[in-house]
Image (cartoon, rainbow, N blue to C red; front, side, top):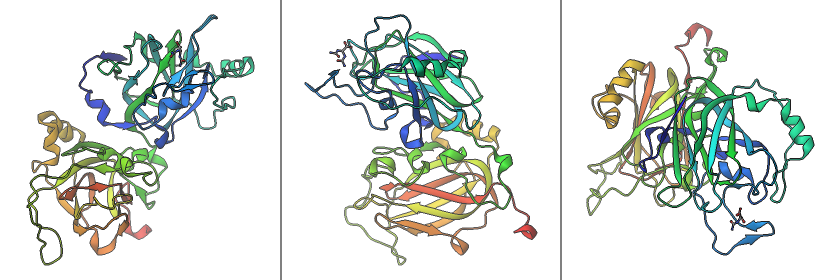
Length: 392
Ligand SMILES: NC(=O)NC(NC(N)=O)C(=O)[O-]
């Protein structure tokens, strides 16, 4: 079900959503041993840190999950509940800064558990390990029998050129939980579980407004022109952005004229723009839009626009296969959903009625910002199927 990539270039699956990160609601439900550093650190959104000369009561301060050197039978493992359940395309096991203490081997298992499955209560604390009662409680869930996504595989130590360990996963099933095994013990800085959320659309009523592009509803970013400071997938993340790092932020465009001018509507006249293309979680009719520039105060875009189109899975595959960047280019027949719209600093802008064009059922959107800057969230509320007007 998996293949390993050792290249330093991140594989394409790392562009998908991180279904396990704490910001998406991912949680560590159980860990055999949290001695040097708690397993919850695995799901942090920021890059791992090194603090020279910093020690805790239990040992060297480490940013990741680090268990004790085992002096008993067995190996260490932890259970992660995905924040967004879905199909997993690959994992990144980041061993940054774990050099003489990295986990030499790991494996990954997964399960799709029914809502309401309970786990023994866990209070993560350094210097602790799971109690015999907690281990006994876990035995009932039989996590050792979960489906193996990545078999036991060697990891590389946490030096800058070896710390990223990538594994493609070919399973197409929906998963809710993963079990990370370290053999026999050691440290891992971060676990990124990349994929696409899957929602049961059969339970959504035809007149229920849903954010069709939200990552938890199955939305995904397929391509972009620039993600220098923040990936455009952040713009479809859960809740409002925590800070500027939790939004889509481009570099300043270098083709901006030295002295800027605006047209009669106040929109800046500049040659360039930046774009990101998203596939909706379900094709639908978009009626309301929110563009949030939360935290972007000195670097909000002058304006944005949104176009939409309908692509079948085969058409999408053909476009992406020709050239990944082509999805944002004119090869696709884009229709205007939201015309050029002035943005302002650190503000939520809600658009509906006459501002949102009636383009019918669409499956993909292109968000364009002019000339550059940051957008923290884009919400596209609509009906997941063409509604019967008589029933509205
Ligand atoms: N210097 C260390 O990192 N030692 C130990 N780890 C921590 N975090 O203290 C170890 O060997 O497992």
